[in-house]
Image (spheres, rainbow, N blue to C red):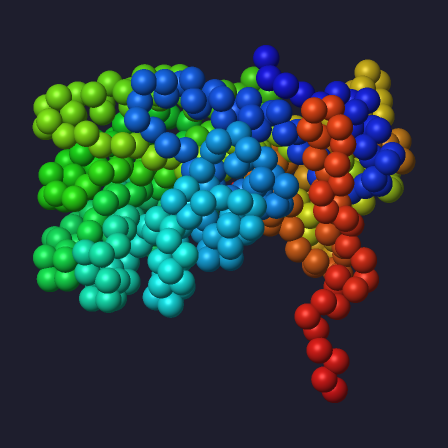
Length: 404
Ligand code: LLP
């Protein structure tokens, strides 16, 4: 059983801070990280939290406090990680399609960098030769992940250097002395099947023989977490076992030790997050009952953008008789959170909680319709902390210049 915040705790937070509000449960984050540590016991593995899932500075500090490293997807995330207190050697920067200047900036900070194009590898090699180790992001040509938008390793994907261009990487290394310490793949998000990771390992083992400086294989993130009731996530203990077997075998066969890195985002924070809304309007409209909440795709876009399923609870009426509802937002286009969802009877003023709201939820929010972003709250050691105040009108005008 995993740690959960109770309906009473969430009700109390809604009353104290208002809604819409995101809530993150610190110990639940730690629980996930500890699951990784125990599943990979005996493996030379390092975990880098993919910060893009949720970057509130308090979350980053908490991640640091439990001993996890961090993976960034922009130089700004790198700067946030530094601000949170991470040392550069524990920061990984996995970019794609960025300007060389940004790579240089990251190099000057001293973080590990995964480069994902021949063009930037040439520039890096020419400028820094063998003096600064880098990672190369490969495209393993493996189709995997919850949906096409979050599938990143397939043969038509923009990410990484395609496997078939390995020779070009080697040429760059020969010509410039480039020090390739790491080979990286990230095949997609929400990969349930352990065999997909095994296939990735196979691909990397195969090419690793061409890279004499290689010390690390970085398998990216993508562990699936359960979103629907009864659904199962990636079998992490099985994955740990498989990785151990494969890496031990490789070491024996080639007399060569490689470390393995992972960059989990969802796995670390998704289930620690709750999003609490209030029902503004109940509308009986023909054969549908709409429950319209004080939020929308501006705050929580996953259902609309990916067709993602998020479990919803009516914490104001946990045991009422169930009916089918369309849970919708207040934005000026169709923003359906859930269709024909069976929920205990909903009244105006009830609090609906969306689960699995830790990863890519607040982080993908916007000011669309000039609405304020929600507040964020963290629960740690049973105490409740406001970690982002709700926006005010000035936040909508921030950065704008009244030039006319
Ligand atoms: N490493 C790299 C290089 C990535 O691009 C990503 C995610 C991760 C690690 C972490 O993947 P995770 O463990 O969280 O699956 N907004 C989407 C997910 C996009 C993931 C993008 N890259 C969603 O809400 O499903």
